[in-house]
Structures are given as C-alpha cells and as structure tokens.
Length: 87
Image (cartoon, rainbow, N blue to C red; front, side, top):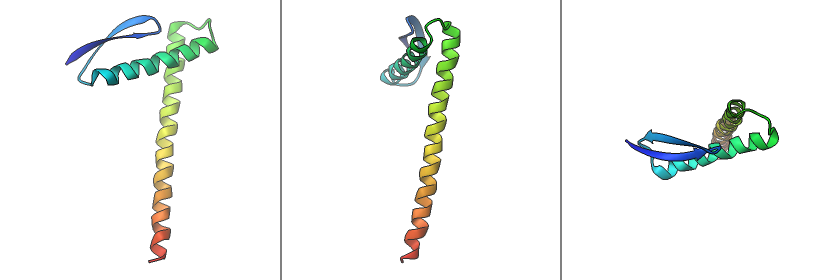
C-alpha cells in the first residue's frame, strides 16, 4: 500500500491505497475542480459547505451516469426483442 500526496483546494492530503498513482491524482484533480466550481459560484462559501455541495454535484453526475446505463440496457434489450422478430 503506497501513499500519494495530492492538493485539493490548496490543502495537501496524503492518500494511502493500492490504486494506481495516476488514477488517484486524476480523482483528486476531479474533486479539486468540483470544489473550485462551487467556490467560484459562491465565493463566501466555507470549505465544509463547498465540500458538501461538491459531493452532491459528484453524486448527481454518478446517479445520472448510472441511470443512463440502465436506459441504454433497456434500449439494447428492446432492440434485441425487435431484431428477434425478423428472424
């Protein structure tokens, strides 16, 4: 298990884990970007509130992506049924 130092919203954090260093840095950069978007939209927001709002934004993106996968799976299933009608 290695440790990697990342910077999120100007603060240094040491992340320990088995994941690839590049992957962890990519995640940290993503979180940093989301935090900065919140701070830019509401400059007087405390770091704690910015963290919560960024987490909600990330959760929203994840939920929409999961829903999109479900929708695509349903579409694929319907296409298979229709294609079976032509056999």
